[in-house]
Image (tube, rainbow, N blue to C red; front, side):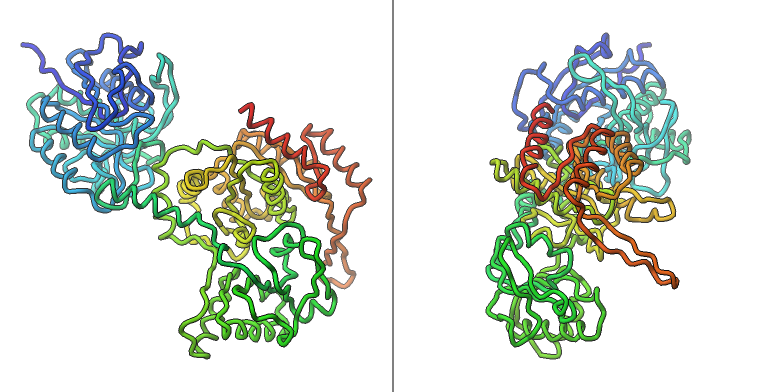
Length: 637
């Protein structure tokens, strides 16, 4: 008696049927689902389906026999197409008409509310006795068809042998396949290394196909029972690469509208600022107004009374300003007060002045751009005491969980194509923000359009496209275990909406610590941040008193962990002088500037050790070195 032929459909990007791995396999037909542009059947642009087919083949060979299997290549997307719900539905209809036994769906749609049409089509396949095996989302979001109760949802796990798989009781995703990196078939008869739920799903499809071979009269319920009886409960779950199109409503039109609406996150937040005052002007967050152009007019530089006694005058882009500290001297004919960190010098005189200043501008209905979240409480208290209901707008740079959930829809737009350059530093005071401003400035002058993700709350005041303020008094309300997906989405958003030639960014604090005694949470956040933005190259900002040994540690981390080059080093001319007292008081740290000859000596020592160009970011004579280094690297890569 002939064995029953098990029909397996691979709903994916298409399969390179003539790959050496697929010799003598029984391929019945290739079908283009829905509205996929009808190209030559031999023209495969994306290797995803070919790799999924290979893991299915491996799993069947390991657990059963391949000879009595018939394979159907159902193409629902390629490299130029997004995954569309209507194409998945059409593909399932094709499988029903051709009496397929198992459908492998290594893709999914993220949604809290799956459409009625997708639900009914999957249910129709189930009622025809077809087993649907679908990939779950790697980040535990609800994903369909995998989350439908009649679909075999698959997660990715650490599994060494293809005869082993996992099961999860009381979980909508009931099965765990091999999701670790493995050598699989790729395009042009080549091989690739891949991992993730896409390939874990192919592993489970192969096991199910083998069970159907041995139990040809089994129902779907019988197969599930067999799987649970033999599966392991101790498989470690992984994350990986699944073809997911993320949408938050019941249809693709809604998803496209959401993508369009998300452009608001990347709009200029300061376009309504025409005339503003800044307080307290002496904090380091505002120091770059002295050197770089602001997109608005600065009317008053306001500071604490105690500070002004010591230093009355300041410069803003070369123009001399007299800092203000008396309320009756302030210009109230402004549209915005930019409010920094007023609590750093907690003297009673300073705090009282800050409260009086805030009340003055709130009465005038002035807009408030706030860096310090603690100020919001004072603002609300003053508004309530004054019974003010209609007043100026308040803006605090922050990233909330709800914003993160929305922004992650951009993950569906795929990989970032434009180059990403990250500024890293030895310490929190090596001038990363200034370096980013300088790079942006010189590239703009050369004719390049620069996208910018700033991690400083003042970043948008200097033209950043998005602010991710996770440093001092950070306002990122998202756990950094979720940053990888979120930051990729933000970088993709800058590319998608702003269309820059290059994107720049920089982390917070120092990349490493001088001693393991001081390793804290901020180091983990920095690595999460850099992993999320995935830089193609780096710029290293150093202090003039950093030791060669310490610099070498940073260079080794970048070289070994990120495997990307450092294009040049920005060496600050500022050095710290630590004065220790003899009476057990804390040491005093003074800052001074190195002389040019001393700076050149240090720069030469660093260059001779690492063979990386060294620049002084403030001096214009190094501008060509900066531009040439960036151009030469990215033109070759």
